[in-house]
Amino acid sequence: MNKRIYLCLAHMSGREMDFIKEAFDSNWVVPMGPNVNAFEDELAAFVNRRQDGAAPLDKAVACLSAGTAAVHLALLACGVGPGDEVLVQSFTFCASSHPVTYLGATPVFVDSEPDSWNIDPDLLEKAIKDRVAVTGHKPKAIIPVALYGMPYRIDRITEIADRHGIPVVEDAAEGLGSTFDGQVLGTFGRYGVLSFNGNKMITTSGGGALVCPDAEAKNHVLFYATQARESYPYYQHEHIGYNYRMSNICAGIGRGQMTVLDDHIAHHRHVQQQYRSLLAGIPGITLHDNPSPRHRSNFWLCTITIDPSVKVRGQDKAYAAVLAGAVGGAAGVTHAAASATTDCQPNANVEAMRSALDAAGIEARPLWKPMHRQPVYSTAPAYTNGVSEALFRTGLCLPAGPWVTDDDLRHIATTIRSAIEQ
Image 1 (tube, rainbow, N blue to C red):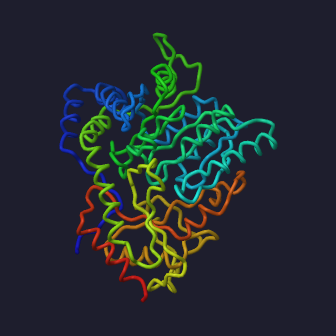
Image 2: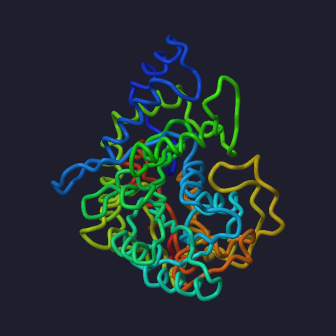
Image 3: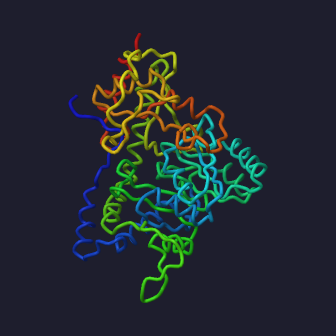
């Protein structure tokens, strides 16, 4: 097999160029325009639909320049400011927590439950009560994250949040199309974050969106997303705004992608089903799956854990040298690492398996390193139970994108099996 199998790579529908050409022909190449408006309407129709036969929801969607921008503006809309605290799932990518610091607030990290890998509701409630006792104030927002597309226990999260009067900002950046009890993620909380980065379920080459409770809330967000301009015949600014609006060109790509979104979700779920079959019976390899019928992941990425007792060829040489760049294609914009190891990293057999897959032309990556173990957040409060650290040490992401074929999946499973010492 000569081709390289990537974790997740965008797949074009053929319609993207039609919408892009329309934008150029009409000279709408600015951060707003007909494609943006239409993309927002199409996204709203998608997230508002129910899969349980219930009446559609009535959420509004604002298209923005990035999912990170959506987190930032959602927190701003929730009144987060200097000196505040925000409860954030620790097991996540940094875009969930960095916007908290943009606003001068402090992220308070909450560990995961073992079945969904997402924020632990019991630990969440403990953290709320403890922060009130310590600071005299309740946190200003809660950010659960749909890790790799897996739904969080949003029923319990919203019950706890409502009881304490704290708004929920759902980070569904990885969970577009995932549902809990038939309702699309991003529509349960006050706000919901979506991402269209190049590796997501659909892409606009970059970009994101914020699911808002209604049109009024959307307009409030868009005011800040377009530099907070007042209605004068000149530029009058009474608030600090941001340049966060999506461009008409990117929205055109998104409109083309919407025509294949359901196909993409179906493909990712098919890939998960194939992994269920192909990885079954490999000792020490466990595929992470929906923990209950209420959870229906889009399986943006398919993930496994490797038991520490599993012996993988070459694990004695794992971390023997400093990487030239970051795993995931970020080389060229990273700092050179000071050493080959850190005090919290995947086990040697996991790194050896990643290296074996890489040598076979298969891209695999470690799970997200928990935010409470990131040096930049070493002083942030954290409520931990050991789950996310244990998963980070044993877990690996496998290819699941639209270009991954059944033949590719068989090659991946064979490579995993052959890398294990018998």
